Image 1: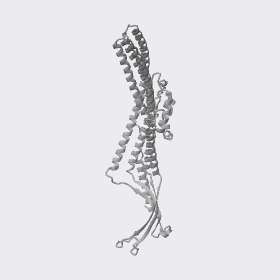
Image 2: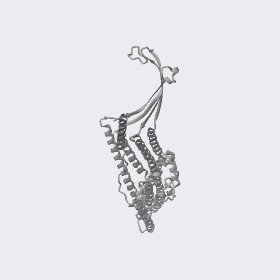
Image 3: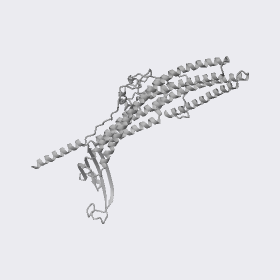
Image 4: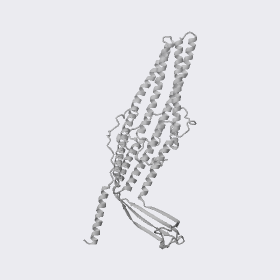
Length: 488
């Protein structure tokens, strides 16, 4: 065989080996675990839910405006501007973005330069003198060089690192959206609780005032010998109980006000929300949509999905460690011992050529790294599966709470009406001397409890709508993933 034929054969063999190795280094495909899917939400029923309706009505910004509280809208704006938790989530996203940019830089050549100028002294007894046996002991040395290098991404190691970085960046963006939604929902939930306590405190204030008048009346009747001391003691006990309950309600409100201050980045010592017991809040209808679309509407699920993509790419990077790396490099510059004639053609030096490097023996390190990356992929896949199952559970939970709280509220309103009739009858009987004051106390206590229970049920139902909005993703979708960070 001629020399030319041998060269052609060697080139063909090298090309075949390269193609075979490239085929072995193919990237693994991202596979998400199967999750059982229902055709509709089981608990989507009742007048408070539009079963099967589209979620287009839930805007990413402003869903809380459906409750009709201007204070909530202003606080949500302060939350976006000042929340330390949201700011830290944004910083985490920016870190992920910077890490991705750093990985992308590996796809481009690197160019370094160095300048070295020094004064050297040789040893007089050195066997091999640098500048020759007759060279001086003292001399100058200067070097100006450029170093260009580029890794040829034959097996996809660099591109997969970038793929993993991009997926991690998208997961961080989804985490930012999830943090923003969670904080918005927490703020809305806290303020709805506070408004419920405003109404509760107003009920207790009215009751305390009415019980004080009743106690004063019973005391005068007791002094006149008409009412017994037992009636007076019962009236006083009822008054003090109302006072105690009101103070407890005020304490709960103060704690909620402090929590809201921390959420919006305000000092609790100077933060105040004015009571609004007469404010008529609405209970908005939240369309849950279909279960099949839930996976695209929740940022935490999107984050889990992107982490599966990142883990898959990382596994591909681990597998490329079994193949050689090829680096193209070039060096050049000027080197001289005469600083006065440094930049001259005779002082020019250069070197160019590829470098092929491969690890032949590592004691099983690469195998262990591949196994670790595979286990990390399995973990991320199961976390994604858990996030999906938890999402379905949370939606069903809030749907059933909305339905049952609504039915309970209707029953409680009837209980309030019955308690008011009972109180009127008991009062008339007591004034006519046909009943003891115990009947009046019992009817008053039952009436107050029924009214407070109705207020509490209304608040819990509204809070369930907030939790449902959060469970549905707050109108978030994959297209708005990166717009979340751009808005900050």
